[in-house]
Length: 280
Image (cartoon, rainbow, N blue to C red; front, side, top):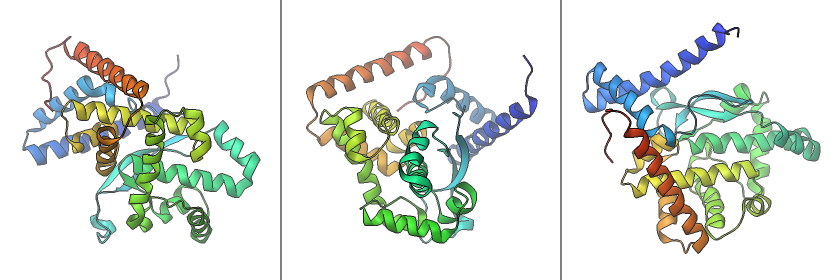
């Protein structure tokens, strides 16, 4: 097999940037040596890899994109804002083609706009109008402002930097999907009623399950946020739903089975070597 060295090089560089960010956080926050930070990074990959969304590989139509962290305050200047790298789906393949045939160019753009904004926010970041117009969707800012006004008239407020004060409503949008699932609805029903693709609904529920599994093991919200790639407020919202909602018996049984499966898989993997374990 011919190896594409250029592709491999960029993949290595991307991974190194993320690894470097983690090591620097450990060195500064825990006052570790570079050697200890590297050892901790390797332990995280080995022990908690099951909880990460992917191993670093991108699906067709996806890209890595630098965004502002949701943890930044509204008054924080861009030059001083914390940033992070998220995975965005620019082209969802058949899903986008169906929307294009049904709703035309404008409908497809608005569909992608919603997906990109929610994906970034779900991983702890927020996009700006400039990000979307000049770097992702290739259109003017006025065009996007019209799109946002149209969506707002249908009670859809996207979690962008310019709408940061409305992020509580953005969280409640995913909250509705999780509530519907916990009340017994199937993915197809939720997709139809809440206007999300089945794949998007499945992704929300999967992240909800993993968040609650880690919370039940005693991990704090910041650790869960890092492992599952969700914002800290959303992790808290998910666990609150799990603790307070009247969950259908078959859904509760499904969650218990998921918790046991993940715990057993992680314990089995960590028992095969002498890697030091992180504690909740």
